[in-house]
Image (cartoon, rainbow over all chains, first blue to last red):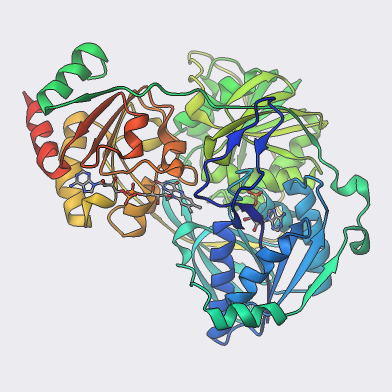
Length: 253
Length: 310
Ligand SMILES: Cc1cc2nc3c(=O)[nH]c(=O)nc-3n(C[C@H](O)[C@H](O)[C@H](O)COP(=O)(O)OP(=O)(O)OC[C@H]3O[C@@H](n4cnc5c(N)ncnc54)[C@H](O)[C@@H]3O)c2cc1C
Ligand SMILES: Nc1ncnc2c1ncn2[C@@H]1O[C@H](COP(=O)(O)O)[C@@H](O)[C@H]1O
């Protein structure tokens, strides 16, 4: 069985991004970039399925500029077998466009399972997995905190607002990861070295049969602003003072 | 512009999310509400009382009992040609279903809308709320999810007509196995007036319950947690507040033993009043707190509980 995992290169989660003064976007010059944390969890899950003997091959796919190869190498060092880089240069690719590219890659690779992160921590869209699943007309198991795979189906426990929900999907299917699915491993130095030699195929959307119209952005970004700043408040010294302030100053008790 | 709002409910009760999402949806034009579920006539009746609703559409079918994304999207798509807008609350249900609808309609979805500027222009947070983007959506049909914490609830007192929708689902793609839902007498996190949250400092599930819950009960508050507390098993996953958990904006948010990572702040910094209790006076949470108490939570929370009782 083959598993395809989508990995996105994003700003590292520790970076507090700054909005550019002219409102044209966020400043990404010299900012640390990493694999999207949810996608790291997705790679880990796929590699564990391989280690458990349930999966033969783990293929990674990333869409973006040539620099996304770094992201693929990160996943390869964790134990994935090969990578596919779909080069869109500096074009902003929205979730719908990513889903269309992933649809083509999925049709080509024919995996039984595609694992994505639930959310990219840059655009915070939380759409791509659901969109891919719709385009393929496959079942979806989103926000997974547990995945149990057998030959014909996958049982997914999902983190939902009310608690947990378990669904059973017939394969092929799409799964998106939530934080509690696993704790990703650190790649060892020998594995990082080995990953450098693993194959990475480079493709363009055109080579996948997609035209410019299929992937051009649909949303127009009018401007990007700083969020409203909160004024730091005061320190109180005792619980009595706190209760007094909450009652008499803030009026919230 | 005619808009279809997807109701948030559990087959019995309409969630408070819907009245809030309705406020956003009415900015797009006339609104019909769609109730998807099984034996959920009561929900449709509740939705019919919301001020500003034209018609409530009731899709009642065994295949919709658990509101799985695949059948729900199918029903929404069967109605979509009548509408120029499709709106849902950005809950796990809305987030699960709406992108399926958008992809099938070949339109981009606008996620987590916090402000509707006009019928095609929206504000939404990106990068864990560190930037706010204004986007114009020129798609023929706007598919949006709404951050309900940013909208007031629409009023009630109306009595819109309820009309049944015929449902003809194709073969199921997925099967519901079970729900393990948290049962609690406390208010729901997303809509609570007061929230008290605990972080990694709580140290264990037992201590979380011994120290946080009595104060929550005194305040009639909902209980939240940081990711670290949830990961460590001190609190259930549905208590997580933050970028990738729940977004809340209560009147009062009390953060106990939470450092204030950007991912946590993303979920609660729109609260009206924030209190932080932390032993580290340099903890970033104090930068957003109206009232900071530099103290050991194990000492001050029992004291707070006592003082609230008097
Ligand atoms: C992709 C991604 C998504 C994330 N999403 C979320 C999210 O949605 N929500 C979220 O919360 N986090 C999220 N995080 C995690 C986030 O980055 C932080 O790791 C997390 O919020 C830290 O939790 P904490 O504040 O409880 O723990 P810590 O950062 O360890 O802070 C514990 C605090 O307790 C204080 N303390 C210790 N002892 C006491 C005491 N006795 N009394 C009082 N104070 C004490 C310490 O001074 C410290 O400030 C996410 C991270 C990633 C990578
Ligand atoms: N450019 C991309 N390349 C590879 N995977 C992506 C890309 N964009 C999104 N994804 C996948 O889709 C998930 C959800 O992204 P989003 O819908 O943008 O929040 C991510 O966690 C990735 O798994």
